[in-house]
Amino acid sequence: MADIESKRNNNESWSVMSENHLSEKFPLHRACRDGDVSSLKLFLHQEAARSHIVLEDTYYGWTPTHWAAYFGKVRCCICSYCARNRVFGSLQFLSYVMT
Image 1 (cartoon, rainbow, N blue to C red):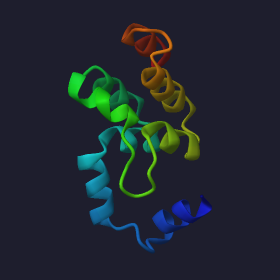
Image 2 (image 1 turned 135 degrees about the horizontal axis):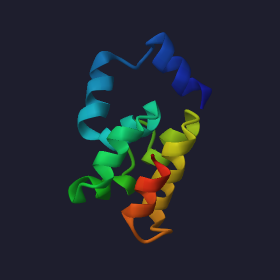
Image 3 (image 1 turned 90 degrees about the vertical axis):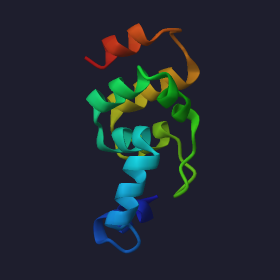
Image 4 (image 1 turned 60 degrees about the vertical axis):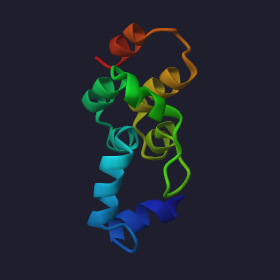
């Protein structure tokens, strides 16, 4: 897994094009990777984007929760995990956790 971060930091195979593709096709993944709680909160309130919470990306086969966990974004990790598993049954709890 350290390979992913080294690729991203050393630009071995992670390019601006990869970054743009991640942002366009996998916005929840990008938000979780970056710890962008505001964007994650907005995405989780959109019905169409919520289905992406279980979507595996085309780079590593990771879900948004994987990205959050790998990059140490604890709040995003908890929120994406709860959204994925509907642990609390509503997005109200997620809004509370993310504030």
